[in-house]
Image 1: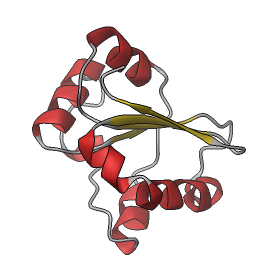
Image 2: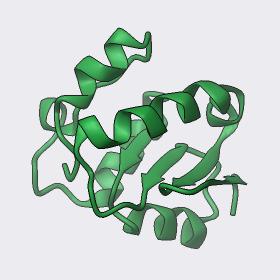
Image 3: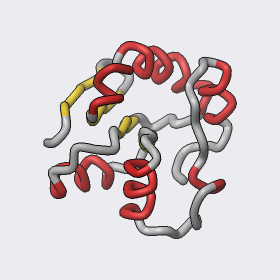
Length: 114
């Protein structure tokens, strides 16, 4: 919910299947609902919300993978050049279970469970 639905088109043009949560669940659904849906449907959570990394750590879950952006500017135009290469570079670990944190200078990859 905290990133633009425009990401669907960006991912689509880069051959990455994506769906924005607004097409699946309620805007005020608990984070656990989104995480459970992503895990059950083998999707990756792409977010700006720090709670998802914490949820993975506390639950010791092996899925779903989460990509978390930690930037002030979360516009599609600003982040596309950072995010798309990360999805492609780490597709194998994302398919197995990972938390990837991206900022303007670097990315950090943690294999699940944390």
